[in-house]
Image (cartoon, rainbow, N blue to C red; front, side, top):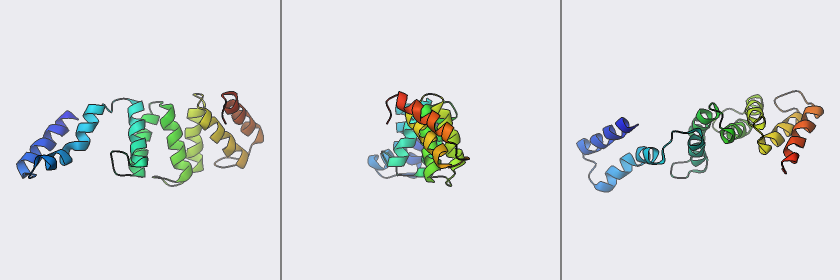
Amino acid sequence: MRLRLVILVLAAIIIGVGSYSGIVNVIKEPIENVIIGYKSPSAWNNRGVDYVIGKRVAQNDSEAVKWFCKAAKQGEVMAQRNLGLMYAAGKGVPQDNGKAMQWFRKAALQNDAVSQLNLGVMYQKGMGTQQNDREAIKWIHKAAAQGFP
């Protein structure tokens, strides 16, 4: 990452961006990555959220999915939930209830109440799986036991 930053700074100087503000714009995002320290799954999830809402970066659902996926594969519960939401809505990825369920299940097994409720609703409606009232009730009760909703 730091090598990339150095290369970008040198490239900006060599091509003569023309002003200090031009150089800042060229290297702004890589510097933010170094300063904020996108080295943890939680930070990767937050970066994904930035892309979903367009905070500090241009709004880009596909880029958000990349960050959520990176964090979710490391067990970050919020990223697993967010990835489930992206698949359920078809934002940044093709809509896929089966994959949404997989990610909600991973988060639900880590006691994420929102994912437990989402999983219960998916079982209740037969979305991404065969309709199953018993499983629906089980997951909805787990969410309710945590005070959600």
